Amino acid sequence: MYMCVCMHACVGVWHPFIMLLRLPLVLARFLHNGRLRMLFLGLILLLFMGILLTYRWQTDVQLCFIDTEPTESASSGPVTDGNAPVPRIVDDVLTTEPKPIPGRSIFFHETSCHRPKRKRQRPDSQYNMLQLTARQACAIESAALHNPNFQVFVLFASPTYLHYGNSSTGGSSGYQRHQSIIDAILSYKNVHLRQLNLWRYAAGTPIEEWLKDGRLFRSSYLFSHISDFLRFLTLYRYGGIYLDMDVVMLRSMEDVPPNYTGAESNTHLAAGVMSLAPTGFGHEIAEACLQDFQRNFDGSDWGNNGPGVITRVAQKICATKDITLMLEDRKRCRGFKVFDRNAFYAVPWKHWRHFFEPQLLEQTLAHTKDSFLVHVWNKHSKQLAIKVGSSTAYGKYAEQHCPRAYAAAGDYF
Image 1: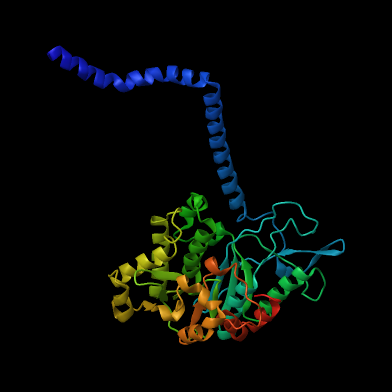
Image 2 (image 1 turned 90 degrees about the horizontal axis):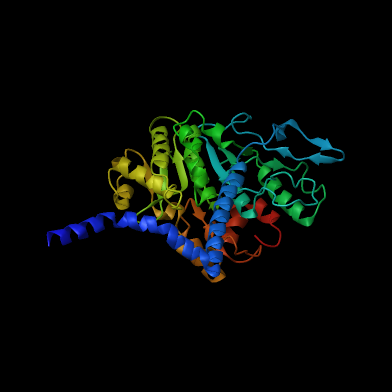
């Protein structure tokens, strides 16, 4: 009996090693079958191609944000190549005057990559040309219109080039319309287009070393997470107001005391509108956001690194996870203001179509009459165009609060 127990115990201990020794024999029999062999080789090939494509995508995308050869900036004037003016790179925010005024600037970020995928006939196809939609221009114009004493900076996260001239100099109808949109926002003296280099922009800040390890570029939502990264970094550098590019500002925010954000729901704050003072408590909040961003970064979660950051930081400041308590007692949050949903997100994302449906025009206008701005949820609404002049809430907002961009949009906005 004892021998039997021993034998079973020994077999149990050595079973994994026995199976390992048999593995070459099993694999040999498996590969001896022609169909199974082809299936096995096909799976290996697919795995290799997946790894290669993932690596190339990450490398190509990272190249979007790396400077090319040094070149003269747009402020140095046009240069011609033969008879055609050469597009010029947008000025760098760190080196070009006017620079952002700490605490008196509004910031938008454009983090898309427009690298050309194939050779085209246009001579500027080798450049990452500046691209803004009429709706993005509307957000910028509305901020400039209602806040004339603030400087409005549009920061491009990749090397970006401008055409010279204006919409009257010729070209295709599409080019003229696009240039008209750019001309519309640049007609405001307080609007400035700038580019930045991610690594130089992060230099000397608490997130400089974290950026170098490359985790950001392995994100499944890269462009969104770069936008999250930049909004906290910009507020750390300059303070002021950060705005998403899918808003329309309805009234001035120049006299609203700094250090605020807005609630999007009963459980989360949103990161689409934020203001922080450039010094003191505001700067401490910005640093806390940068620390939280790198400590809790999750490239597989879309909202963790934007709304998640400001929500977690506010919970620590206010010593509560209850959004209702944050709203009711500003002293509890040591002066950090949490606006209710009506301020910035009166129409929640689930109801984004309300901005586009004529039958809901009056209801939507009434619902947002006390809002500082409206958020039109571009992630969901970008494919739904509206005819210029139509009776929709978004159209009415644009007609009143970004008239030049709206007029430049053409037939559809």
